Length: 343
Image (cartoon, rainbow, N blue to C red; front, side):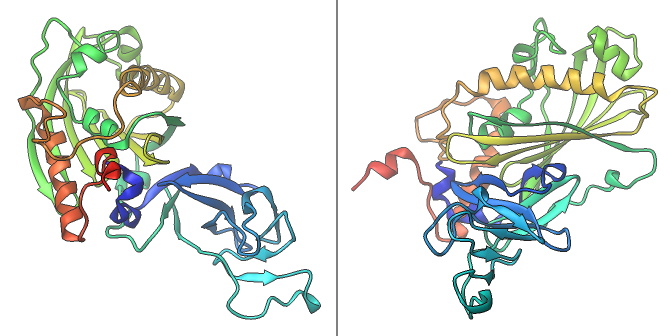
């Protein structure tokens, strides 16, 4: 699947940039192969526009902000957060006249991140009550580009078979490789998978969990939000909740912007954020090392013959079937490098 060729994927919300990075300058971003520019308008609200001036196509992200409007660096044409041109310096009094502007996109801020949808969203940004629930804190973990497909990361996130191999140096138990079988509840735009997984505790994790046991059982409730968003709720026997939110925002066909943060029902004094981030970063680095070596053109057709499967692949295969069903419901077919080569 080539994500930039599947038009329906433009109708989902994607986290693009941490809110704190929108300061006093335009911020360029590429989403599904589309160059956009992010900035705060005159009221401080995050805005997203196409990163092209409608005059001579200069990049607006190379310009600057003036009273909450973005100024093109080429000739000074100026645009508001809704994309309307509000000033053309070369015209009398700078009046741009009517019907001059650039494309604006759906833009919203939640969970300390700016979310963008390129077309009318099919589903809302998920509502995670821990953001404001008493006793919970949000820890912003990392924000970086990976050279892999978002679907690869999503499948990996629900793959209990990879744990004891990819994560053998952090929490996997390679001597007991049989994967836990999840129960799966399908939803309109995703699913929930539940499983109990026994894992090893290294020294850092013992500190994070306040548990000196060599092994612990993770009670895992993993929610896949179509197409590339995951919430993993890990509950430990102690009652500790470690809820990881991971998004693989598609930059283009071969790259994904990974945004990750977590919710915890403990305090900084009990488990410092630095230690929690350090452990989760070790885990994600192990995933990244493998995933960046995979083919980004993930075949959705299960019987394509391109890839072989095993029973523990069930969550990923369901993702593929649901995406194919979504495409069909909107008059699309799967686009791959093979179909692109056809005359």
